[in-house]
Image 1: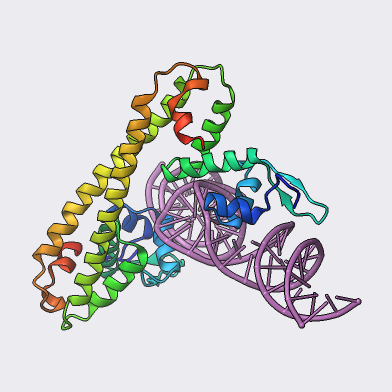
Image 2: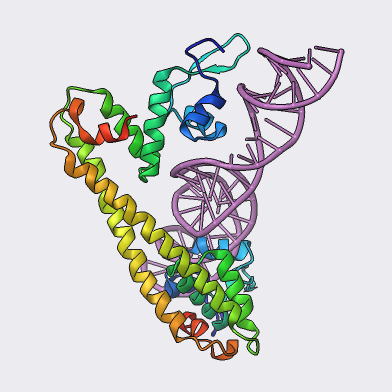
Length: 133
Length: 133
DNA sequence: CCTTGACCCTGTAGTTGCTACAGGGTGCAT
DNA sequence: ATGCACCCTGTAGCAACTACAGGGTCAAGG
């Protein structure tokens, strides 16, 4: 590998991404295909490292690959207003809020079910009862 | 369809389940295969209705199909202790708790990012900045 | 010079829990 | 007899990876 270029494994280590995942991102067009060495190895640049870091950070924050694709496209138009970006982020926040409250409702039900159970036999298990029609 | 038997569409309506989903549950062995009419239609009994209701209720509470399979198996051994059931439910509760706190952490980060953004141009968007390396 | 081992390549299939067809058959009412 | 709602099988698609199989490449050590 030439100086200034990274092998796929290096890129993976630096971004905490599995090699297969990087190839997957390339296949679906999220990460551009890098140049190849004479031995047909992918040779990544610092630019790729930046993009992939961005992608991984956004994934960690729960953005979908489609949302990330949009964010990446938008982030290249430096002079545009960032309203669209704000919109994506706010939509995502709303989704997260919804998921949290769904899970909290579910948690209450589960917890109620569990605290009812005296742990005798299955025949009088309140958990099974709660699930049965 | 004979009296006391349900067609797949009826079963679906009564349990709020898509017909394809019911066939899927049969394929993966979660719901037993019903008898067939002379015309090769599935003919479900009240027993199937009970099982499917159980499955759907458990799904609504976020149990995985594997967990539900275990719950169904256990719920048939009426005389056994219900410890194992309790364990599955508690494991699931712990998972839900973990998901909630992950989402809450994520929510804080997202919210912070969004409140920083003045909505000028992309070039000085705090959201993009927060995601960039 | 040769071998070993770590790395890389492509291509395909599996995961979870469904959902959506395509291309046909059944059953009942008009 | 014909229209229509319903049923059948089988296959492929979704998200976002993950896990092989079956090979090729490259640098270091003997």
